[in-house]
Image (cartoon, rainbow, N blue to C red; front, side, top):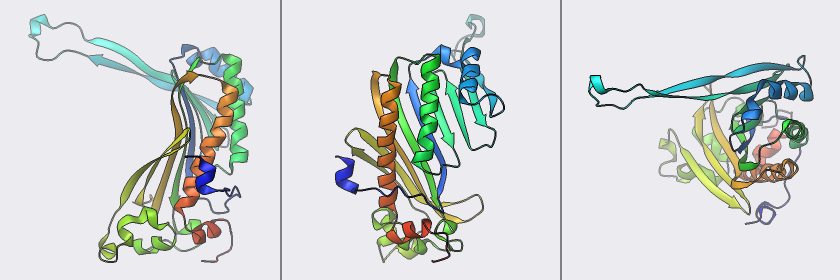
Length: 272
């Protein structure tokens, strides 16, 4: 199914009140030891803005020990051990975004997303740096995940006090039992998972009623847009396809909210 045929023209206007909690872009590939070497992380740091702009942290390695059970003590052999994990993370000085690399993956994450137009250049910089230090050969998965939590503040109102209030904010196709007049007043929690396919883009949508850390009622809209399967890793093509992942995620996000909720997110006035 082609995305444009389903959702039409997408609204790329920035949201004054964004429900985005986190955005993560991740590229997975075959194990690439050169990516986690000290020389590589220092070169990444240099290419992305030097040490005064990015703090460097090394990720811990994990040692796993395995020993067969049920053996007589005298016949027990030494446990087999292996070491995994490790890598590095570069975090921007203002805390707005970070780049992480492990043996088989590279990721870009932000908690201050803004818009795709502001996020995409970061991806290009990271992919250019990857090409500079030597890119892997095979892509196994490319994903872009948006974690959104809709609360009262996202639509310019006081905290949501009851589940019934979500019916004016979340579109009916996601609300399930809240659309049933016989049971909606009894619902205390509701979660769901939807898997969608748009041409070459797959989307997993996890959604449902949650309680935030501040003990406020909210609605989770967790969208993971991705493609998977082995293919030649081409940094320039990855940049373009990441835009398609963004479009799919944006289409699902906008289709999950009522027009009223979307209008309120785009306005800084107290109009709800």
